[in-house]
Amino acid sequence: MHLDQKVTVTCTDNDSKNNGKIIRIFPNGIDVEVSDTIIKLKKTKPNFYVGSMAGLEFIVKT
Image 1 (tube, rainbow, N blue to C red):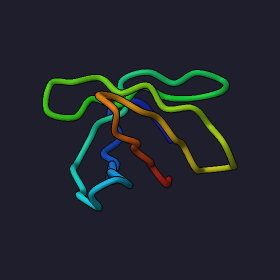
Image 2: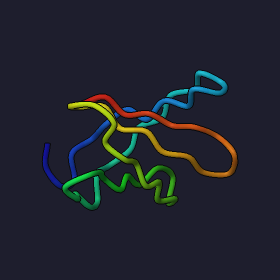
Image 3: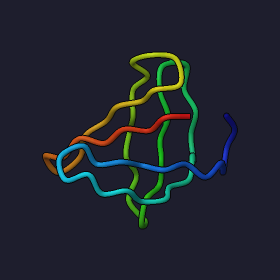
Image 4: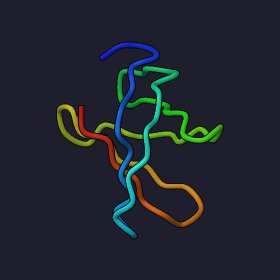
């Protein structure tokens, strides 16, 4: 995983998928930009990140 890597962000509430870009990497998570919005995702398992915004849950698998 690296900065500016393209990832698929999936909304678990409505099963929609959007392309995102990793803009920050932390030891316990990442920040992903999707449509000019930044979503903070926490690492829950190796290569699996979960976050929420606006009452919706999002996941990223890398």
